[in-house]
Length: 273
Ligand SMILES: C[S@@+](CC[C@H](N)C(=O)[O-])C[C@H]1O[C@@H](n2cnc3c(N)ncnc32)[C@H](O)[C@@H]1O
Ligand SMILES: Nc1nc2[nH]cc(C(=O)O)c2c(=O)[nH]1
Ligand code: SF4
Ligand SMILES: [Mg+2]
Image (cartoon, rainbow, N blue to C red; front, top):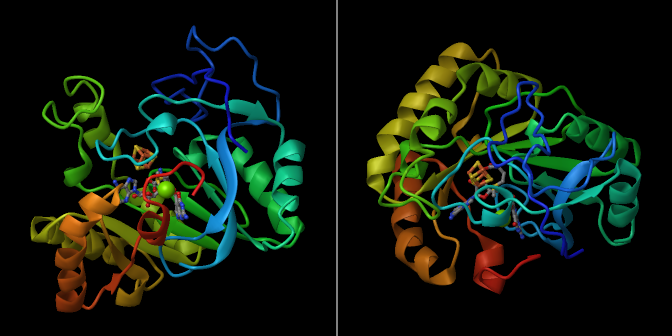
């Protein structure tokens, strides 16, 4: 479902209750009580992680509490656009894809929205396998089948040189928020989890190893190395061609899994893929 509305959600994405607001003056619509701001909803192959290759319906919410400079979903984070849809409408749209029994809830950051829990509950009740793609800064109680957690390293920080929209105004807030050990620990404890790190080069590994040490200390549940995935940074085929071999070598060296970005290989950066 292409979303043509360009109503913007709050560009801060950080209302006190953790729910994004429609406080931005460009947003003329009132959100329905049980709804979500949907950026796109489409059918594709899961491109990343343990379930790569699985036909899945993707539900992409708008709004994020972080601002990774490399975000491949710019219109959910830096410049959020959406159309509000009720949970009923979203479930109907998902059920329209007869072939799929997997749903991927992503964003933006889907877990900033209270109503994400309602949607996951409805999809679970309808028999779907539900993967949630999350940056790991928020834990919610919901019937999630796979928590696909992508904690953000310092290589994601939108410094002035890398900021796609300004001069580094978001850098400090992003850095303060990007790792929440309590939220990560709770996600790992409660759900089948994969930890999917975006990696550009070997300078990123010490940070991953340090975070894993801290998380393994804090979590009751084990975090086996095959749940740790290194994913090459790159929103385009051209950029992936620069990063993927280095990242594959790092996965071999450390005994972590490598995950491709199948959708980028197949369809480059086309929307709804
Ligand atoms: C757009 S994010 C949405 C979910 C959530 N906000 C998160 O970051 O996990 C979906 C996935 O794309 C990854 N991602 C975003 N931009 C990327 C890029 N340029 N290269 C590689 N992975 C990227 C994220 O790390 C995450 O695993
Ligand atoms: N095909 C495909 N697979 C994906 N896996 C995670 C995605 C995401 O944006 O969260 C994604 C995506 O955008 N497309
Ligand atoms: S956390 Fe996810 S959606 Fe938010 S800016 Fe980073 S990659 Fe984009
Ligand atoms: Mg994506």
